[in-house]
Amino acid sequence: MKVLHVAAEVFPLVKTGGLADVVAALPAALAAQGADVRLLLPGFPAVLESVQGARTVIEIGACFGALHVRLLLARMPGTQLPVYVIDAPYLFRRGGSPYQDGRGEEWPDNLQRFALLGWLAAHLAGGDADPDWAPDIVHAHDWHAAMACAYVAEHPPTPAATVFTVHNLAYQGLFPMHDWPSLGLATRLMSPAGLEYHGQLSFMKAGLKFADQVTTVSPNYAREIATYEFGCGLDGVIRGRGEAVTGVLNGIDDAVWNPATDPALAELYDAERPAGKQTCRRALQAELGLDRDDSALLLTVVSRLTSQKGLDLVLAALPALVQSGVQLTVQGEGEPALQAAFQMAMSSHPGRVHVHLGYDEARAHRLIAGADAIAVPSRFEPCGLTQLYGLRYGTLPIVRRVGGLADTVTDASPKALAEGTATGFTFDAATPVAFEKAVLRAAEMRADAAAWRGMMRTAMARQSSWAGPAKAYLDLYRKALKARQER
Ligand code: ADP
Ligand code: GLC
Image (cartoon, rainbow, N blue to C red; front, side, top):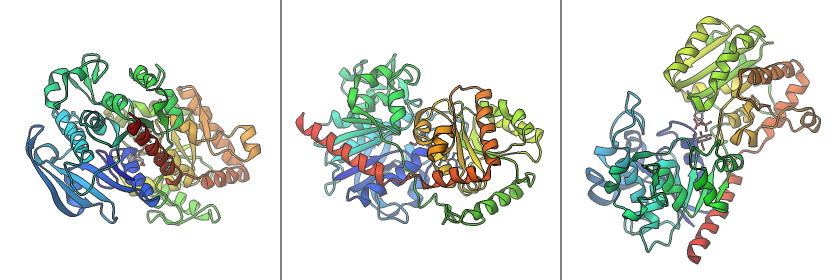
C-alpha cells in the first residue's frame, strides 16, 4: 500500500510540537510493516538544507501567488524515507516559525502557503505530479494539510482515499471568506456544508468533512471533541461524521527516547539497572543550581507555554509546593505572561525552582531523565507525548485526567497499587488545589522507596512503541480504501 503523509512539520527538521515527532516516527513504523511511505513537506529553509539527494520531479511554475514552484523528491536525512518537498521560495523560504513571523503574528499568506500543500498532495494522488508514484492513501495532519482532503475529493477521477488526523482541534486555520477565489474550488463549497465556518473559511473543516476517515491522537480525545466542551465549535461537524471519527493513540520513538541508550544522559539506566537515574538526578540539580536535596520530589515541566497546558495551575500552587519541599524545573517557551510569571517564580525560590525559557532537545532529555515526576496539568490534551517520555524514563506523570493523558496514565489509587498497574497521579478539577493535592500524593508516595520503585517499574514496562498504532492505521487505510471503492 502506497501512503503519502502530508504535514507542515517533521522532527528534527522543523518542530513546534508533538506533531513533528509523530510525522517523523509514524511513517518509519508503517514502512517497517511493509507500506510504501512518502512524505510531502513545504520547502522551509531547514527542510531544503537537510534533505538528501534532491532532484526535481516537476516544474509547476506560478501558482498560489508564487511565481516559481517546483516539486522535489529527496530522502529524509539519515533514512531511506522518500520526501517530496515543495520548493516555492516566495511562500516558504523565510525565517520565523512555519506559521508565524518573528513577532508571533500569523503569516498573512498562510492561506496560499497551506492551500498549496494540500493542492500538491491532490495532484500526487491524481498521478499528474509524479508519473512514477501515486499514493493509495493521502494521510493529512492538522489544518495545515487538511485542504488535501478537499482537493482530492474535488479532483476526480482519483482512486486515492484520504485520512485526516486532528492533532489539535484548537488550531483551525481560519481565513477571511473573501480569500475564497485563491483556492480554486467550486463555489458550492462556500457554504456551511463545505468549508464555511461562521462567515470564515476553515481549513480544519476541509479535513473533517471531506476525509474518508478522520482520526485523532487518542481514543478519549476522539470522544471529547464530539462534545460542546472540547469541540471548539466543530463538535456538530464531528458528530455528523459518526463512526468515521476514531482515535489512535500516539506512540513514541523509542530509539530517540530510551534511557538505556540516550546520549544526553549523565548515566544510562533502565528498569533492571535503575541506579543511573539517581546520577542523572544529581547531575541535573547541579546543572540547574538546585539544592542537592535527595528527599525533595523533583518535578519537571517541558512544554509550550500556552493556556492549553494549564501551567497557571502550577504557578498558583507553587508557593505551597515549595513550602512542602518540592523542587521544580520548567523548560518552555510561549505566551509572554506565562514566561514572565515563571521567571519571577525562579527568582522568588532560589535553589528550589529553575526555569529555562527556550527550546532545547538535549536539555529536555536531561530534565525528563533527572526528575522524579513530570507535570502535565493540561486543560485539554489530544494525546500528549511528554507523559509518555516520562513513563519510559521512570519519571512518573502527574496529569489532569483529560484527552490522551487519561488514556495513558493509571492513577495510584489503592486498587491500582494493589494490582500493580499504577503509573502516575491524576486529578480532575482544573484548580491549583487539585493539582497541589496530586503533587503532594506523589511526594508522599516517593517517601516509600519500595512503592515508588514498583510504580517506576510498571511505568517503564508500558508499551508505547509505534508498532501497535502503525498496525491500527494500516487497518484504517484498508477500511478507507474499501469505502472509497464502494462509492
Ligand atoms: P504539543 O504538541 O501540544 O506541544 P506534545 O506533548 O504532544 O504537546 O509534544 C510536545 C513536544 O515538544 C515533545 O516532544 C516535547 O518534548 C517538546 N517540547 C516542548 N517544549 C519544549 C522545549 N521548550 N524544549 C524542548 N522540547 C520541547
Ligand atoms: C498536538 C497535541 C498533543 C499531541 C501532538 C501530537 O500538538 O496538542 O496533545 O500529542 O499534537 O499528536
